[in-house]
Image (cartoon, rainbow, N blue to C red; front, side):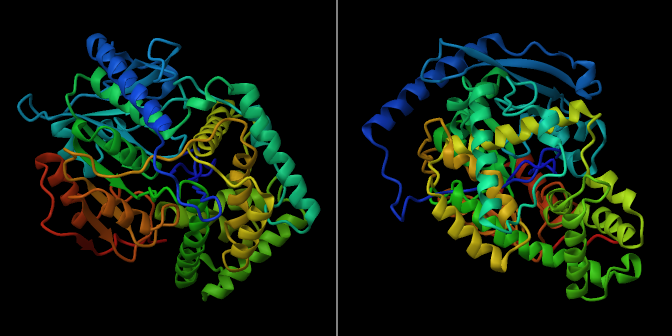
Length: 528
């Protein structure tokens, strides 16, 4: 899903790239006695940490002024073990926040915990859906306290880092599309240096930066909130947390929504998932350029998809030859433009900036796509998001170490899907030289006692292709899949689409799902 400075799966650290490997074509082995023993120890460690958290609860206070969370949102901390196999060893503190339900005491159904994705996204802004009076969530807010958290390594929760944040955002960067073997060697060197920097700056945390550990943290947060069972909304990478949590703690789930689903298949986590993303991004990029052409009266970028694509290629070539404003090259353009295939809410803003550039206003593009070196807090957040993204995906699963394989796969994909392929490859390449033991992904499946899970997925999602929702649906027996047909915005539950909004409300308020899977018409297309 990639953190992007781009737009988190993934807000402001966000594209969510994903990826997976099967060594050759060998299926992942069944858990060895060793692995099982490790999981048993970690299960015991989680139970110990959860019991402690249930006893101590959370000391809610007004949030620190610089967190940007207005009253009556309150903030607190939950203590968890760095390593669940050693529950009495080193502890880290996770930042959490909440706002009480807006309805009566009788209407309250507990806490609804949220994760927006990443890996590397912060959920702390979730309670602001109440303070900003977001109409989509008004009914649910009557029944639930809204709870957000910074996952381990993110934001205020023992944050990790791989490189100096000001260096991280410096521009222009190399064009992701290589012209030569020398370009590839330079990118490989950068990726290896990045992986080494992660160990140097955050070595103690790295072996424990995994999705199963984040799921265990979620169970400790549940206990600290005083909740017997968890109500959880996971978007994007948050759906993989949901899949892993539902597998590890099936009897602890009360209601669970997975929105825009990471394919939980072991064969996909994470190398193959990233390659699948490249294909889906190209499809959604074409959707956007076709929409821009249809609205040529507003944008004047060409009245056919081909003409708009030519304008993009021309812009890219100009930026490659001479970075715009000295700072916006092809890499910065992709970071900015990729938010259009990500989110429909970016369609108009991105097209507007593009249109201004073609009409002769270069400053709008520089303002939108260039880093702001004076925004040190934003740059720290962007670097941290990228570090967590890398650490989790690289540690969660085994990655190909052979450069030949990376080169072959990405060269082949780039021919037909050029928009994101090489940018995505370089972002993930630190995993090829990752200096920490890589885990075997959990086999996501239905455990005894898992209630119906609600899955929501758009058919043309770029960051988490549609097949991911179908795969989780197959693995979680009794789950229901709501398909938003002919739509592709990433993160469906936050958009206005009554066919979906009403079902999400019904599920969270009553636990009821439809008798069969449902297909909804798409939400409204943006208007310029």
